[in-house]
Length: 329
Image 1 (cartoon, rainbow, N blue to C red):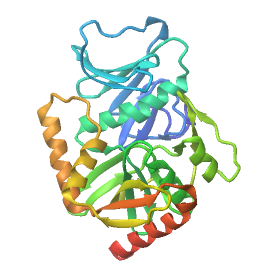
Image 2 (cartoon, rainbow, N blue to C red):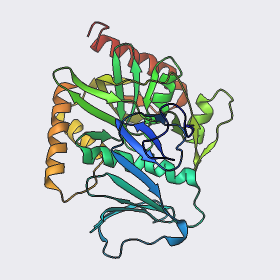
Image 3 (cartoon, helix red, strand yellow):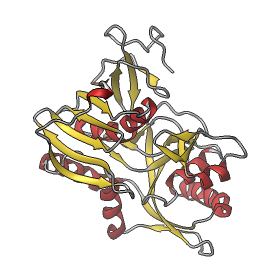
């Protein structure tokens, strides 16, 4: 955790902290555990308002609502004269300025600070990346000998479990939930390292933890946090994407090229978007996704969805990665 006055931790403004996350330098009034300090000029400021004064901007117009199984908005997307509004019902609302330079969080009563920080890192930062002109995918990724490999798929497909299993076998965990990408012409598309650690369902955590006690996540007590593998600090070339298609435990393991009918929906469904009415942002994102599909090999990974199959699955992925991109690539 960064300390006030520690090298690289103190911001230019007295009493603030500056952190590096997904290529952003973010200034915060309070420390955010798990983030690397930064000496760069901050491009966004994160502020926490008094929880006793929680209210949404009265002129908010709601545009889209994602819901949890219990019916709560998680989040509801809206906009107002002050900027974009994200409301995680019963937890916290965020007001994001039009260009993403300021983020004001107002928690509901009795909400722990670590949940607010988790929502900021997992939900708000990817949207800031999108506003800034880069893109993020809801994906996990690891760094192997030849570069980065990412895993896409719906919730429950095993993205986090597979990335954690590969990390425990010597790969570096680049990200668990948010894959931040940047183009470096003519070298290709690169992955920016995210904040560290895997968030696993209890059965996955038990299978991978080797008996270690793992703590529950704030706001998601059914999930467990697992730190695994090395900690990468530099961006890495994206060498391949696997679209996960879990199958019954008796099904064979299969890796085949993905066609447009699989690639386009998978990329669109995995993308973060803040303003669905902004045609410029949407058009820019779509063009980037098409360049990504044209320049990075994307394959279907059909595999038995069972923990005993994990060792063979990891070996197969590493072998496939080595075959597609030898160490000289």
